[in-house]
Length: 310
Image: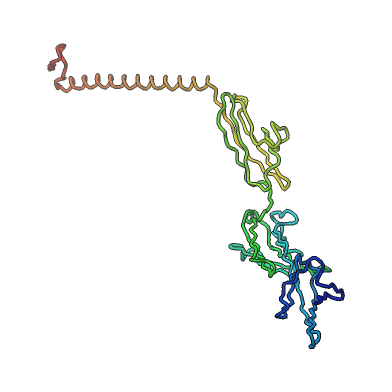
């Protein structure tokens, strides 16, 4: 038996990678080729020599299937506001034959479109790129899509999940209090941005030229004194832009608090005295009126019994 590959002849197969797996008595000349490579593709000729009948020959074409190497992502960051740009790319590289690709987009079916390109190299290996094309916006950030790849060299279809990553500058800045810590108060500055802010700048005036603090730390600690009263500004930035938020701080000292309580108590006492005086005045006027119209005025004796004055 001879196995021929192309123009090169190898007796008993392709060196150490071929193993006879047939059965000669039943004229089965099957061989097993291990560690198949792309270079093994071609036409294989098997020749049987049968006594008296002579040689028989048959040709078998070997097609080598190469499964794709699949990735999904972006070559450059996608920035909000870009129109007609690539939001994501799914690539099935160095496959033979070319892979079939599709997208599962869910709610984004009417928002983006798909654009495929195919290239082939000198060894007839195919690379397929499937691009999601659309207008990048903040609302698309963190939306989930799925790239689906099928190929005869794969046991089952590949489903690669991907989360869209849209970059955008800081949006609305929020300043919140982390609570009092003794004689100081801590404020926190936060915003929605992608990527996360790289700098937080605090100041008392806007534009923020004279800074209280600047850096990656988003907090500011302020002493609880009257000198801290007034506006505070937090300027947040990343590589795509900046935004500012503000708050107004009003600190009341303990002396002011005591003064307020003193004034409140004095006012309360004055109101009570006025009510008592008004009640006594009403009683006196009532007695005078009763005497004037000749009606008896009820009185109370020392022993608690009531009498009548005429």
